[in-house]
Amino acid sequence: MKPDTNRRKFVGIAAASGLFSIVPRHVLGGQGYVPPSDKITMAHIGCGTEGTRELVTGLIQDPQVQIVAVCDPVKNATNYLDWSKNGIRDSVRRLLDEPGFNEGVPGIRGGRDQFQQIVQKYYAKARGLKDFKVASYADFRELLEKEKDIDAVKIMTPDHLHATIGVAAMNKGKNILVHKPLANRMNETKLIMETARKTKVATHFLAFQGGGASVERIVARIKDGAIGPLREVHNWTDRPVWPQYTELPTERPPVPEGFDWNLWLGPERDRPYHPNYTHMVFRSWYDFGGGCIADVGIYSLWPVFTALQVAAPVSARAWSTHTCNTVDHVANPMVNDFSFPTASVIQFQYAARPDWPALDLFWYDGGVQPRIPELDSDPAPVGPGGMLWVGDKGKILTGGRGAPQLITAKGVEPLWKEETPTAGRAQGGARPMGAANVWTSAFKGGEPSPGNFLNAGPISETVCLAAVALRAGRVKSGVRVYPAPIKLLYDSASMKITNLPEANKYLSRDYRPGWEL
Image 1 (cartoon, rainbow, N blue to C red):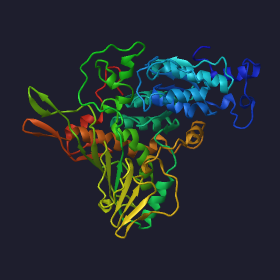
Image 2: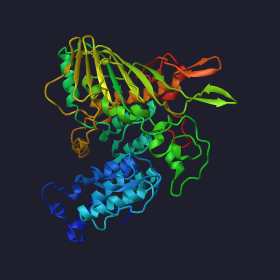
Image 3: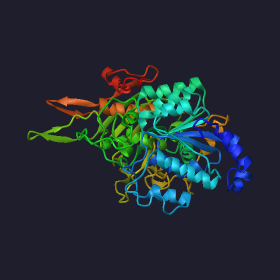
Image 4: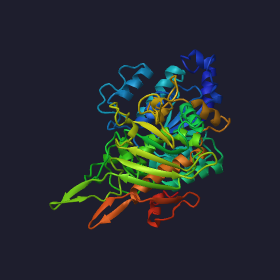
């Protein structure tokens, strides 16, 4: 079948003609059956570990979605990094009921060949699509030119490619899902939102996971006066859980076979290939990632921003670790304008809203946590991920020790008596995987998803401003340069740092010729 053949027609004709030798009951009809003409045909761009994990744990089983094309600069590789050695492989084995899948394959496998293989094998077994072929591409631009009948594009690439691919797909009239963050530059965040507004396609930001009930309940208690006027929110994480590089790589290993390095770089400046840039560790670098707040903070903070009606930040200030090296027997702090620090604290300020006073949001990563004086005498540790709500009359601790706790002058007690489900990362638990029906309904012409791009502005601008604050905050002391908490004043309407003009260069990218946005 040619890549641009209308797959709805192919699936429908094949099913009607008995072309498939084995057709499960749910293909012929019955509970949960979705006719081929009603399926969302999807191109999946990004076939690494995160994309594969989300594929096998949910997306591929969705009867409303038909993946028809895959795309990744990596054809086939076994040098991927992940949270466990065989976690994804074993998930694929269970999905396909193939105990020998990838038997004898060294390392951790990824790339478009494996992704295509998984989709075709699953559809053959579960949907009876024995002769159905998934198109495969290295270049997303070729995919968008040839796959004219697709309804949707899912983007699961490194952060620096999100806006480039997303804007191109929306301009082709495709509905899109984008993994977090929307982009890792402020200008691209605003561009991808404006393109969504202009093209009027359906969008869904995969940072939205639904399930903000606990946050809404906490906010209701705050409105009732449980801790007085809310002044601060503190959110912390155990991330990073990947290497944070403190020097630019100097080795020049060859580009692996089947890896298009130029396509992986996309809009970013030319540089020699090195594995320390790619796969999971792209998050370490300002050019390619968005740091810990872009990786996990979006999950915990989205329901907070929604419940508190937070707009874009008006300022940011960052404290961070630094590293030193020795040159000619002299120790020196390293000037680092290329990678995120090992640990940081970032303070954002937000203007008052009709129902809320001005708010300070503090973000912590690298194992740093806020001090809670009321718990100093308590030997029990606060958890590695959590949130602290600070008011004039008390505090609420969530995620740090299980169920929410109310901290006042009277002591520490449960915020409410019975247990309630936690709300994703804000409470320190695993993020929920729900809300799929929200975007599928929107992509079929229903109401916009609550996770649509136009609702993602404040959280996305916060994430991008975090990196700017970290990069701009440096002072010179004698011959040495140190990180320093320089407060940046930010005007969202003009997209400018108003008190430190030289920091504005960090709001956009130095584009490679031919990749400008």
